[in-house]
Structures are given as structure tokens and as C-alpha cells.
Length: 179
Image (cartoon, rainbow, N blue to C red; front, side, top):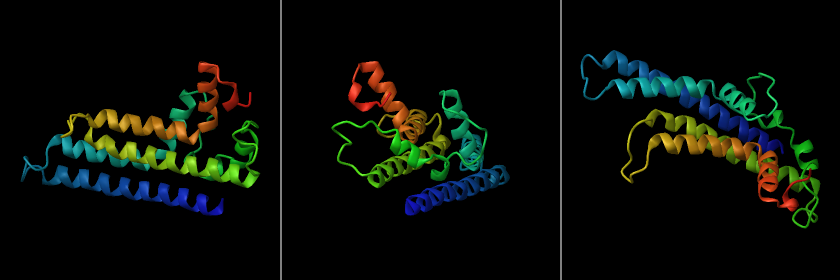
């Protein structure tokens, strides 16, 4: 678990670093826009600056989005850290059924931690993809949809037990929820 906590801290730190670079690129674009308006469009400058600011506030954005989904929000800025998501209590809350009977407590913690880490990467990538809002992709997809799907998927992965219970109660599958 210590390695996963270190990796989650690294993911958050990389997100902050990307945020700083994107904000600086956006500001640089505003400075260079009068010289070359075709290369530094308003959308490019605003998109990079907005994305940089959002990446710098990614923990707060996650906490606020989790609060709107009914997940307890204490207003802290360390929402993306694995240590704030108590893996031990999450592993204890895993349902004891045919899927998890043979797993040890350490394995359950590792699975919860890994899924959280994947969710944190997806959430930060979703915020990074916000710089492409409104642009069409070559494959016909929208940058907006891809960014939103990554952010929502990241939130689902970081709160996998809650969403597995929502899924279980929606479709009446009792084996994947402990309550």
C-alpha cells in the first residue's frame, strides 16, 4: 500500500506540474497573440490557461464533484490522495461473497488501491483533455465528451464500492454490494 500511496502522490504531482505548464503556455499565448494570431488563437490561449488552473485545483474539483454525488465532502484539498481514501475500511466494506471469499485483507486493499490509482489517472487526464473543449477529433469524436467521460470514469473508479452498490441495487444483483 505504501507504494500505491507514493504512486498516487506522483500522479497528483504530475497533474500539478502539467497544470503549471498549461497555465504558463496559455499566458505565453496571450502575450504572443498580437504577433501571430493564427498560431495563438483565443481558444488555444483560454483553453490552456483554463486547463492549467483546473489541474492546479484538481483535488478541490474532485472533492466538490464527489460532494455533489452524495459522497461525504469535508472541503479538504487532499481528495486525490490515496491516504485520504481509507483503503482499510474500504477493504473491510467489500462484500463477502463467492468473488471475495478467497482474498486476504491485504489483497483487497491492494485491489481497492489499484482501482483508485487508475481512477486518479483518468480524472487528471480528463481535466487535461478540457483544453480541447469544442474541437472535433479526426475520428469524429468530441474533445468535450472524452474529457467528461474520463472525469466521470475517474470518480467512479475512485469510489468503486459506492458505485458497485448503486449498480447492484439498480439491477437487483445482491452479490456485489455488502449493504
